[in-house]
Image (cartoon, rainbow, N blue to C red; front, side, top):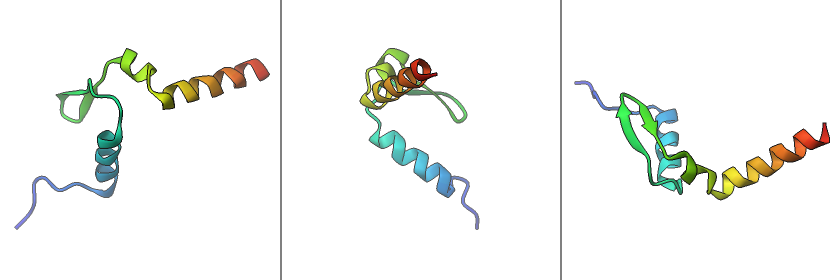
Length: 61
């Protein structure tokens, strides 16, 4: 008939990103709302790389 729990393409991409994420402190607190520990996020390589790039942009201006 119809599927109550079908995911669209964007949902599937987000689920895959969560599976690949290094952040493990995440939890669901509401409908579609995830919370993660900010200190754990700051320790990830991608965050540190982005922070370094941002610092270079700020000092260059």
